Image 1 (tube, rainbow over the protein chains, first blue to last red):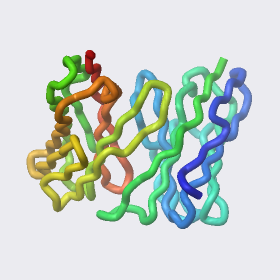
Image 2: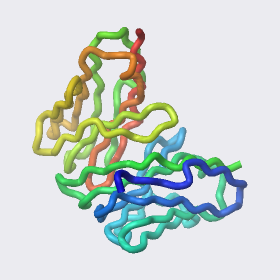
Image 3: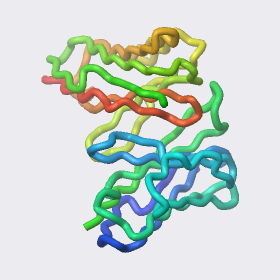
Length: 116
Length: 109
């Protein structure tokens, strides 16, 4: 596609519910990243995919967070039993190649998650 | 762990003035450094990317320098305009991006 797309753009949920956030990377990009932007923490790394595998999950804040990527393309970030502190903008980025001087990350518009 | 700091946190200037935004980072083992712009409620727009081997990069009124050995980058915006009002973020890439907290710029007409 022309750019990284994310859905939904906005999600309001009740505390304790599960949510799924979707990211469609730029076609042909092998690396995919999830970041989170919240008022108190700024922009922080969550997880990185190379193809369908996730070599670095170090940024996931708790075991309620998980992510998968299928077909080397679409990725889904799942948050189980949402808490109010999960409220943030979740950003997805993709790059043609992971790491190295050719790694330019392109960002999607984000999903704004509000947990009531 | 990479720490990225941006100074100042906020900046207000009259139209036409040049802007100087500073970014510092603690670990010089990076592939590149990116400057982004973020408008309120919007996503990130990439402005400039400087490879670790480069000293500077220019695009129109924007110029970014990189001194990897001292862990510093500076973004210069010449002849500022009200449309330049936004938050500017720098991010260092050691395969994942580590972001600064940003500098919020207001250009007064």
